[in-house]
Length: 595
Image (cartoon, rainbow, N blue to C red; front, side, top):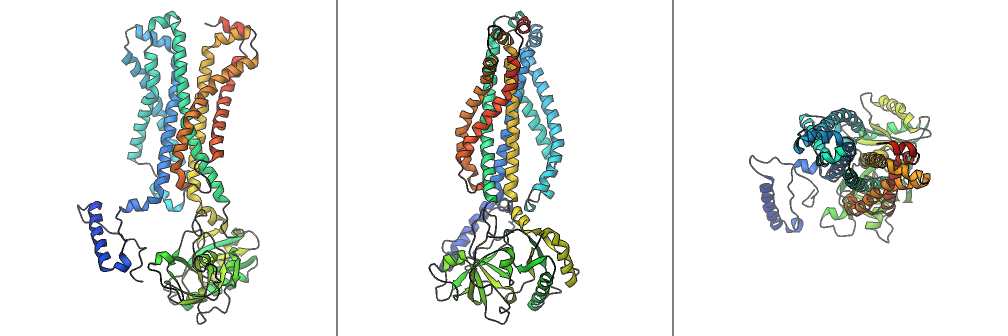
């Protein structure tokens, strides 16, 4: 089509021992030579060389990085949580550890023993996690978009199993090291004598546990903020106006084999007969065919030249989307005709070449003018076409992407074998599937219906990738909330047990139920509040990473960053309430008699 076609990518296999950098250097040299030889079309154009794997994964790199970071955060949350629970549990084993130390066990030996216990615990959890992963992977394969190809790529292999084992070992070591070191450093004589140093150590341990909870909540703020942004963005995407009436419309694709349909007249006759059968069927309001169905991601594009105006230096500057449609397509999918007319029986192969443009093209190429009656030529078939109508623009890719300039040519003037069929039903569109198969089979019993979906499903599928990312991140955020609740409950329950005598004295001296509950609730909510204050600035700074994944909201959305602290504080209050209620109901006599 000429030297201005710069949109094509080239796939090449490098020679042995040639690096990508060497290939890039060679291509830079070729690009400079082309600039000198063809200055009018190649000036400013270069070549980008990259591995094919990188090119294919380019759009998935940011989501993959986000999910990897989220998984790391959740693993760190679990380590902090287990460390806090083990630290609380180790206080009950203080006398056991003191006896071991008094019998000659060194600090290193005690630490090794406690780490052995935590490693066994973590490896057992890793084994259970692998079993759960097999189940969750099956769910993920079904939920992921087809273009992710998870059916063939998502599976367990030896490398994954070894990695899981190493992570389990590391998790056991990390989560058990702090409580093991803290417990092994106590003085055996003080513990066995139960002197005042025990309470000093208890207070020190309480402070350490509070720091762990604060860190856990700080990480949760980051996770919840990211999940909240993606959920709100997805909700905004669901309410985007696509320009279509998606209700009661069934769609499917047909690809006529070249062996049977070698000429344009044969393909045009087939689609004309098929649409006539649909229009005469009960329960069908209208039917039409189009070469590219909106929201499916397909596109055929090229340059656009208006008659009487100079041709653009590069086709990219005037790129438009090409489409062919049959009469009644706009009515079937609910695209309003704003000016002019729809295609009809007048628009045949031998008649005047005509076209309908969308209002995005009209604004870009005919600002302040009426495009009706204007003529243009595109790179698709090279014909001068007269514009006879203007229709509303529709979204072609995902709903978040803006519409692009587009033209529609009558199918009879540009017949192709590969077309989408759209059928508007008077009732439930999904119930027309058998009717569609019967109609197609009556014309060609060997022809399969491809990608049979309602238009509502087409729009929903266009959001499958952001939906999957949102669901995964929301699931991790909910799991983080559960870990927070367990961690806060553990520290408050531990604190209540250590202060049982104190609670009995307070009740005996006249402390009310609400006084004791408030005192204990403060023990759980203060570390959580500190964690919120520490996590919010980090979450605000990290939210910029999600900017390319968001639609319709700011990465620093006020409702999200105001709601996350409220949710976490409610979780902290809820996790603290049960131990607080138990402490308020303690019997002073029993509490004061306890050892």
